[in-house]
Figure 1: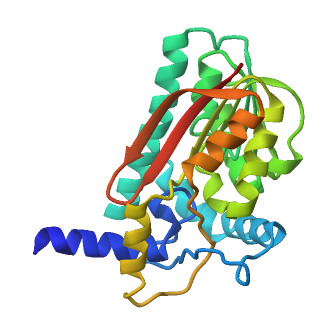
Figure 2: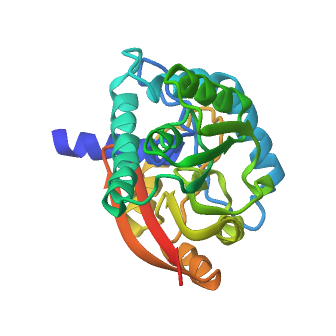
Length: 272
């Protein structure tokens, strides 16, 4: 019964919360879920502009307060939020381990799209990379800059921008747990834009669309659905890989991170 209860709750969570995969969840400290994910159809799909507005407003207001605590050492988090923190930290650490193993990041340029509070951008800068990091949320980008300044980091700049507006050329482009906000029909375009910014490699994570997660969502739809904040999208891995290949990149390394409430597929693709 205990095992069933665990997966039943996970199913309900997958059907209603974006935190199960990436940073757009909405939970209060009583473990009450207040976000909802939807699967787009031809008649239900909202425009990217609407998604952008929704995400920008959420992470500039209530979402910023919540996720700033999750992406910190704050004790003001519940057990689900702590699980998500641990999952996200695992994804970040996997990237840092790859970079460390390569041993060539010092002096190289890195563009971190959707940087949040700097969870990846800051340690990359501390490893010697020249970092340009952006986030659609001004509150997030400002917090990231403040954290970097408090550590005496001078080789990282943070600014406010949506992903499509980022320009330039960089050795490495990273985009971690951002694709959750992109509708299915916009995913390939987003990946191709990231590739256009990268000279050498792209690192991207996304919520994988598999029969298992889809099943959990369907089971979860049997549970009452509370109010939502941002929409969440799962993506087929083949769509991401095809977009990378069309842009002249080949997947070199891959990882999967899964905790009770966080699921993220990580791909590193290098230009060929």
